[in-house]
Length: 451
Image (cartoon, rainbow, N blue to C red; front, side):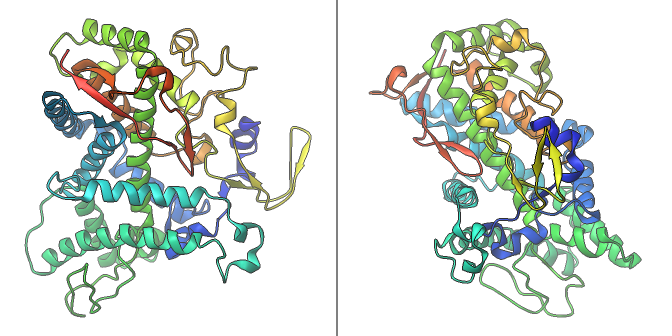
């Protein structure tokens, strides 16, 4: 059924049902997640695929990812020496946030001397939780004006926090340019501003120049001359651009940080519940990498058991258990059923991953199953589609796969692990907290130890 919806009849199911929560801060009007398939959407995907997620770009940034993982390991060593347990999800979130912010803005939003990390993760988790809640206004639209559950109001507050943060960063860069300072950061933000300037000078009236590209520059919709506590003011003559919101960029930070950190947290939880599986993974790492050596992205292809662990985590704990809802653009027949126009269509990955008709011992964490099955997560094998499939497959898949294997492999190769005192593998809380993403209801805490 998933293949019928996402591939065979994809032309009818490529657009999204827009929830009332997604309308907060006009998020749905700019977000690549919610935009309908259109020229604007294609332009956004092209910018991401060319300037951020292309193989050559990821290869060029490989050393940066290695360095950020080494910083993560350094923090964990300090905890190990102090005998302190660490919150796995928060540590992974910090590493992911550091990587993305350095790549985008040439600045580290995960500065250990600030409270950014915990506050940002709380905001991101709260946003995704609100977006995933059942909302009366989605089924009774006449209630939108009163927002009876307050979901849109709370989501708007979370969006504003994210947008204000990026406001400040982007306005600082624009101000430096307007003051005549030479900006040579050579980061994603600089590339996007350069693209915008070129298109402004050409005065080309196309979507990339006039609509989509500008939405990558995030602000609260301020025009030149308006100021706010979070953003340095510009006078009307200083800035030739109109600065607009870019929930598309916010999508990258939310999806790129929380989904990676929650998947890593689930992986570590399953391994701590099954020490024999962790030992097998560590033995493979020691044989392939060598004791004391750094795990690198180029090693991943030679670590089939590590890859199997990641796939098994995706099967049992998909980051987006229902994907993002699709909408039927017209009446269409799927497997003998008539789907009316404008129907919301959900693909239940969580249930697919636990279906006994597909998987042997579906509730047991068994990475070995993927050593025998030729199944990948690239959207071709519909038994396992954690990133979706078809034209709206998650564009962050290449980066996510590199980061997940690199972080998990490094954590297992550099440390032995045990649960915090008082917690046994048999009693470890494995309940999930549903939203748009699937998070652990009880954050995982574990003690790293020198091997």
